[in-house]
Image (cartoon, rainbow, N blue to C red; front, side, top):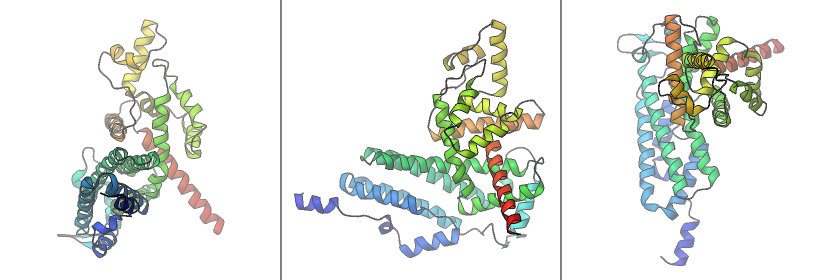
Length: 363
């Protein structure tokens, strides 16, 4: 290839739109309410494709094929009735209000997959596929020499989508929490319907960077297992973080369930394991131990090392979630909610209070 040709390719712009039929792409977005790529994500993918034309043209079709499959999933979702409109199903008529009532009144334990709308379940599959896609694009952008900020942007988008998966669990937990007032539970149920319909949620978009920052900060902590002094270090880190997180720490950490859930989050072991470890160290007269000694003192293998991988975050969350549900079901001591449950509830209650105050102010 001659120099003139190389220069021409270097400045050639390739938009991802070239690989899709424009009318069909727009139609699937409008019908499903799901945007396959947000404007920000589209710009990132365009930049990556432009780079690949120059340095890895043979791999470009892999990217476009993957995105075409994502759009295919979105089109399949378009065949299912909107959750926000009245729909005539096979044997009944479904309304958004009836769906909200069903979410609130169904309080049985166990897997709830068969109680959820088909569109909700299929939409989760779309979101998982998109998470995997962006995780791959993150690695690919690094391999083809993209700027660090673009690689980080792909990673951040991947993590944000992971938090949408987490949010579904949190919303379902809160919707079925009879300690919350009915109006708030209905508001949460509507937020869940909107998440299912659009696979996006502004509340979680605002909250996820905070939880991600706390997860990253957890790596820098060197908690003294046994005395459990890591919480004080987290408080010091909190002074440099989001105002909502600061308010949460200041107003809620004195609540026993919140402090217990915080310890589970920080130390990566269960409430029961924390208590066993405290008791063992106290009996042996040992003030504190490090992360690498925890398994030997508990007499079982536990994972206490910290990773920034989004899959590890979700895995650790799901373990704490399952433990909390089991305690609540059997009436056992310890946190009945995860730290994520408690923080998201706190933020949404603050937002609700602000909205109410704004309404009263206008009146």
